[in-house]
Amino acid sequence: MTVVFLILAALTIAGAAAAMSLRSAIHCILALTLGLVGLAALFLQLGAQFVGFTQILVYVGAVAILAVFAIMMTHRASAPAEPILSASWLTGAIVAVAVFAVLAWAIHSTPALTPASLPQPEASVNQIGAALMHRFVLPLEIIGLLLTVALIGAVIVAMPEKQDTL
Amino acid sequence: MTPGTIDQIFVISKHWLLGYVPAMLQPVVSAILSVAPVLVVFPLLFAITTVLERKGLGRIQNRYGPNRVGPFGFSQPIADGIKSLTKEDIVPRSADQVVHFLAPLLLVLAAFLAYAVLPIGRNMVIVNLNAGVLFFFAVGSMVELAVFMAGWSSRSKYSLLGAMRAVAQMISYEIPLVLASIVIIMASGSLSTVAIVNLQSGYTSIWPHWFLFTPWGFAGFILFMIAATAESNRSPFDLPEGESEIIAGYYIEYSGFKFALFFLGEYLGMFATSGLAITLFLGGWSAPFSFLTWIPSYLWFFAKLLVIICAFIWVRGTFPRLRMDQLMGLAWKFMLPMALLNIFTAGVWHFMPAGIARWLLCSALLLAPCLLLSRGLKQGRKLQVRTYRFAE
Image (cartoon, rainbow over all chains, first blue to last red; front, side):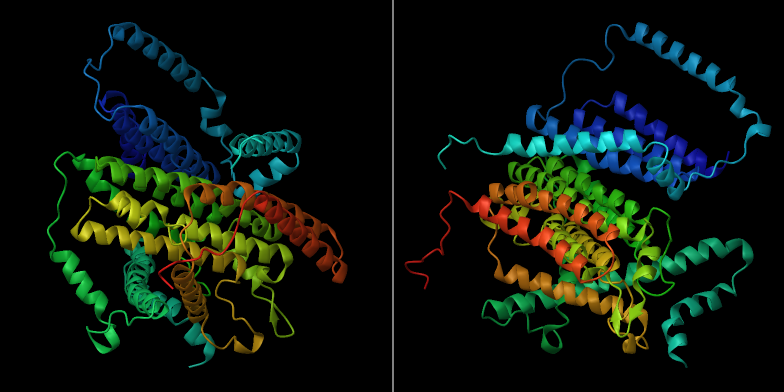
């Protein structure tokens, strides 16, 4: 556990906690973005460049922007008056603790954690690309086709109807 | 000194300086020595560009431009800097104080981060990342968040409108921007900016191997530059700050040095995107002819950058601003299909044997749809030169 890891972990947890506890929805999303950036930095610290940059590109560049845009168009800017803790916070806390316990137990008992079985995985961009182009080429092509269809569909939805007189 | 020494003088002097530093501090000092020049040179370029732009626009509009401060008005940026530093920093009472403060900082931070992967000379790059191009676009996407934060936190309807326009525009034009650069990644087989430049630094007789000199590279460059203009909110895509409608857009409620930071961030973003265009399409720091390689590599990078900046100024002075629906129509109905087609063409180019047939087929594959698409989009619209009753 290095100093860098501790700083990044604190940043991520602080972002996530603020995302839950702030009143204004926009503030929550900005705090969540901070948490996601912290997570991306953790990926980078582990040497997973591709995953880290994709995390920033997708979550900060797309998901956060989409969320703020939706809120900006629909929501009032003022914070709601009701308290932050809902009436069923106890149930929620129990479920959260239970999920965390199961996950922690699963991670703790995994054989990958024993130091002997760690060959230091080297996940460079080249290897990810090679894996996507050889082993996983069919799923990749299908996803690519699906996304292209969605993109063209969006353009067609935005096109003016034939009957419209401009 | 040989040309090789002059070319590497900054790299050599950095290593010479590092020799005087204890081994424990060397990584930190090395990082500082790499980052500090970027933090100095590009803001300086920003200062020069502001005065060049104002003078250039002035000449285009038949007036002088700044000519009072210093020789030929070239000390104008110093006066501007002192002015913005000493101005009162006004924050609207109803503004969201924290977000309002953080927005310009995030914008400048994101703009500076992008320079980390730009090779500005031979062996002159801050970090040679495996996924350099991906890094560039990842930090570029943070700019949108900063723009939104600025517009939303000001609690002004003009700011909010400006931010909505800016974010919508940036999201729309990011797609053709990334799709236009994908052809380069396909051709070079690498996401590393250094590898991409190295691949283009060879010569056939005197002509360089730039990706610009292929049909798909040329089309990609045009698409990339249009998208880059829109990404940096410059005219003719400057609706987010349309003066006649929403005054200054998302940074209308900023004053003093924060306002200057927005300007800095905008220009730094423009330089960075132009730098990426140079890296991807114009061979980075490599010389345009094989007999000019004795000129240091970093000078070539900045020469290319200045040419692109001049083109930006020229475009700003001569094109009228687009309307919002025209802006979106251009991105989604013209640039997106062309970018997708360009990717296909790059694939065809890769699998065809080299020769004149490959050139003809790929050019036709791009030119014919371009003509057909622009014809199709023009249908049913009356396009004519606007006639003025009094202005002429």
